[in-house]
Image 1 (spheres, rainbow, N blue to C red):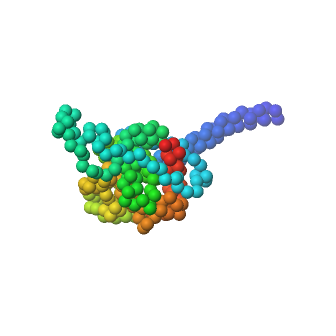
Image 2 (image 1 turned 90 degrees about the vertical axis):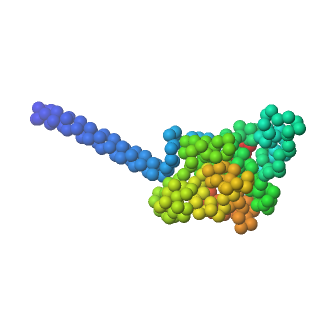
Image 3 (image 1 turned 90 degrees about the horizontal axis):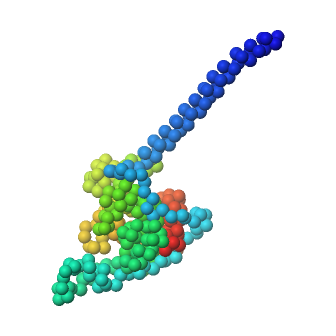
Amino acid sequence: MGDSATGARRRRGPTIAVCITLAVCLLVTAGVVVLVGKVSSALNTWEAPGAAAEEPSAGAIATPPHDELTGPPEHHDVVAREEGSEADTAEEEPLDAGADERTRPESGPPRPDEAWLDEVAEGTGIPVRALEGYAGAQLILDEELPTCGLSWPTLAGIGYVESRHGTYAGGEIGPDGTTTVDVIGIPLNGQNNTQAIPDTDGGELDGDTEWDRAIGPMQFIPSTWARWGDSPSGDTPDPHNIDDAALSAGRYLCADGRDLTTANDWERAILTYNRSGTYVADVLAYAHAYADAS
């Protein structure tokens, strides 16, 4: 009886080992399947033409808890550059121009002060050229639509969530305000939680003749850009230029007489940009974080 039991235990030993090995293999295989599924899903949610780098973190900042926020941040003033300042003169005149050759620059749209930009960019982590676009749009709308109350942190919140301030595709916003790599989203074909929007621009702006795609640092769809696209310079609006895109986004948000200093109008405005409660909460959190850090 003892020898029989010992033999049985010896026979069960290899069997148990095999079972354990199979169980581990199955668990590993299941993990790989799940991981591959997650990676495949992630790859299906974004297509950035020419992107060779990992997603940048430009402008990343710690945000307050979403459930603690009940309204937009207070309106934040922007220090405007004085007309005819040394910075303006340096941009308009050659360095070797004599005193009698210098002329006063023609009046143009208000622009943020450079010292203010440097200070706020350092505090918030927003790239200076992106911040200049957001703040410049506020200065223009403060004059043209003062009852709207649009503040640059709201535009910065949208800019971060939509495109990481124009860096999502692996590039950055250049000195002229245009992204060095076009930020173009996935096809809006009804998949990947998108609304199906057949092509409206013949692929002129997004390079897709079958479906529309969101474009630029503020991620406009072509049909919306066709209606709201604007440029502070008076040139043809370019959705890939942060000055044009931020001003256009501001006009879009201020539409229908909204007062963006109130919670209801602010939320309605952001929902017109993206009909998602999560999106509204994310933009609100980043808007508050940027306002608090400035």
